[in-house]
Length: 271
Image (cartoon, rainbow, N blue to C red):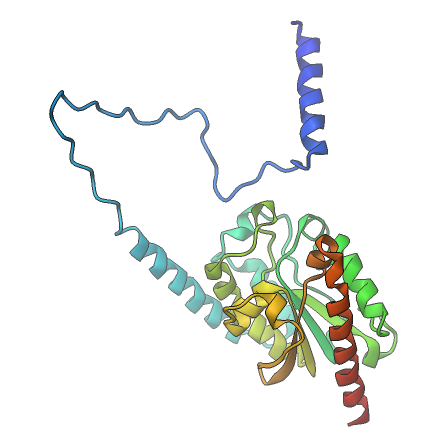
């Protein structure tokens, strides 16, 4: 095969992978695919080989490292006196490994003075590329959902505007859910984010903020529609719009939750 033919074949394989959705070479850690596995010694005939105990000591430093990262996040977040301070602190924070594989730190969008603050899970591919939350298909779904009750992130009327962010500001590899350690690391920043933005109502979209901010142990399908208190404010659990794209039958539940949210927002105006 000539060089040109080989290049054409390689390009065809690459196009095929892109069509399948494999558009980024990204993972939790680099893999050396040329490294050979260590040879396994064969036991002599009739002689048993003792199994080495599983390494457990490595878990202790990892746990200590996670706790130290949370403590550092708490210290840094507490020192932020404005949303711009917080944005800069997140962009400079090196405690979370997700940042190393992300293109952008996705902070927030919308009106930070709005009475409604919406907290999602983590950025996806489109959000990571543009540096804004909820701009991909799930974000377009969210915009349509909010528009159905007269809300928009860029609404001219403050009472009908909203402020949107995610618990985790960096895209996890292959759009996996953030781990418990990653969510715990970002919780101090989010609690400070809420304090600085000072919304009157919160919406928690999906499992990640429910577990990472509220310590929920049940899934969002059971939690949705329930009101809880977070940072001294009423917070509504709702299904994530990405889940609605995969399971449109749940849109009826989302509509019921949107109507409940609308009632609460109208109550703010009348109060």
